Length: 293
Ligand code: NDP
Image 1 (cartoon, rainbow, N blue to C red):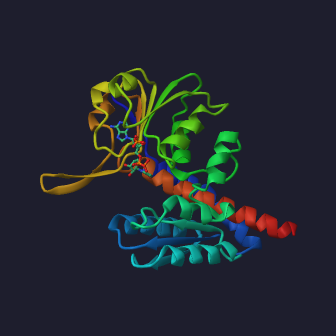
Image 2 (tube, protein in one colour):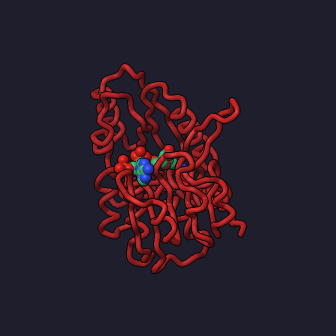
Image 3 (cartoon, rainbow, N blue to C red):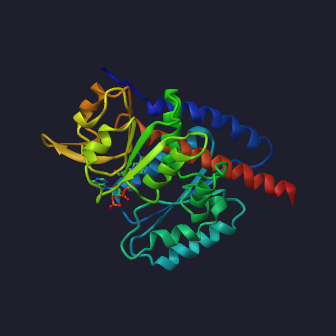
């Protein structure tokens, strides 16, 4: 069986087109949405991610400001900057690019961002809303990208056995909560590095979301025929003197699954589109609040 390969770039472009309309509506009565991205240090991968986010802003008509802080800056420097952008009525979204250098408390930094400007969706208020089933606000970008991708297959998730490999605060756990929510109704298992029998868990799943960050750890023989595979993992591997990106699922899984996301070109571009969507949502709600007052 050959899979339907889900084109995350095309799905992202579709979402971007709808965002362009929302942005042009905002611009008729207000300034353009404005995203601030703060990057600390010189991590080359972070620089690539930030550049991709800046390019997406440009395509959609969102203003973006990038602030580069040296890795020698203190946590207080970053905290003060966040405080300034929180107060700035000209800023709708604030994103601090991960990872931060050693010595920075990443979760603590996230908690300092005004939840209404937290376009990554990592603030405890925004993550907590998922538990309460209030999903209209700023959701974490990768989990909501996974949900959009699943929706695009047209396959009903109700009653399906879904396995999420990984339980991180920003990917695995919120994705599991979104799949288990009322109305989606998947039966979700979350596994992690201490879980036993990953092979058995995979073999008894209808949907596998792989988010462990381990190249090819899901063997293709573990993938049930006709299942849906969402590969969130991004791993850089060296092969024949060349460096390339691969996911957490072996490539040959595409001969067994009914739907599969490629790496690169699957979850990644949709994640950026969801970030753009959150930025537009944040701008709309800030504009609506200023209209009301
Ligand atoms: P983390 O390192 O924070 O979490 C990894 C999770 O995987 C942990 O819960 C860990 O378990 C679990 N894990 C590790 N090894 C195993 C194993 N052998 N079996 C089962 N579970 C295991 O990573 P993130 O959640 O931040 O990211 C996961 C992957 O997704 C990475 O490759 C990352 O690059 C990628 N990513 C991709 C994005 C995209 O846009 N496509 C966006 C964000 C991330 P434990 O809790 O026990 O340590």
